[in-house]
Structure formats: structure tokens, C-alpha cells
Length: 108
Image (cartoon, rainbow, N blue to C red; front, top):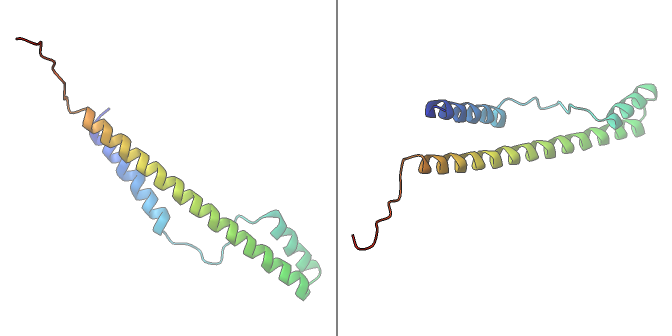
């Protein structure tokens, strides 16, 4: 495999990850919504009261926390994959330099 192709792949993956990490986020979106949040929203639409509104807000907060944890896990997995890829690349480049060990016979 050509070395420039591997370097290009590393660059593209890094750029995609940077875009994901620092990209624009919609602040008010809690998607994907859980079934509990959808059910709480339906209950509020059918019977608007302070209790059902509190339940909707509670479920939206739980969804937000779940989404935040999910994003942290994805970021940790991406960083782990990057570290593993750099280590594999470094070992590969180190061993592909054509270095060979020659063993000399004793006495000449």
C-alpha cells in the first residue's frame, strides 16, 4: 500500500474528527428523544398542568444527560482509536525502514 494513501487517510480521519469535536451544535436539541420523553409530551398535550410540565422537563433533562454521556463516550473511543492508529503507524514506519540485523560468525 502506498504511504501517501495511508497519510491521506490519517489526515481525512483527523479532519472529520476535528469537525465533529468543534463543529456547530444546536443548543436546544435533545434528539434522539427517549420514549419516556415522548410519552411525557403527549401527557402534557392532553392534560396541560404544572405536574405534567415538570415531568416533561425532567425527561428532557434526562435525555440531555444521556446524550452528553453518549458524546463523551464517543469522544473517548475516537481518541483511543487515534492513539492506537498512531502507535501502529509509528511501529510500521519504524520496521519498514529496511533495517536488518547481520550476525557475524565468531572468528572471522
